[in-house]
Image 1 (tube, helix red, strand yellow):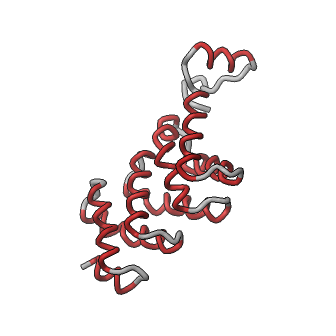
Image 2 (tube, rainbow, N blue to C red):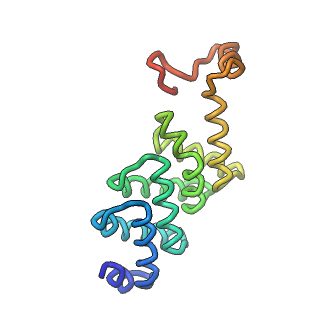
Length: 169
């Protein structure tokens, strides 16, 4: 019924809305989460010129990596939309990037806004999408490596990447 409703109220067909719902189900969203999430994801797909199934898949995958809850969906999509408006990246490219770097930024306690800004800067300099996520992931992993080479390099220039409580700065 919700797929039919979205098919009538939007530029997507009921079949496309059903495909979007199926990706949410595959991500483990319950029926209430799916019913509440379909319209914001649909609006993102419209704004980002994506097909709905792709948008749903990218949103659910990237949220998983970022360890975001379904209750964070609207805030997350607001950040994605704002970053794609203010930088040289599309919503789809940003979602692809978050799939590759989201777990690392989440584990390091880097905020969604900071992560998004870093990906926006990379995009402004020609590195976008999955490639940007992979490169940012590599940078963060190397910066925070506990190897003697990495820690020695930081120590030699008087920088600590962790604060007194052991949190990434």
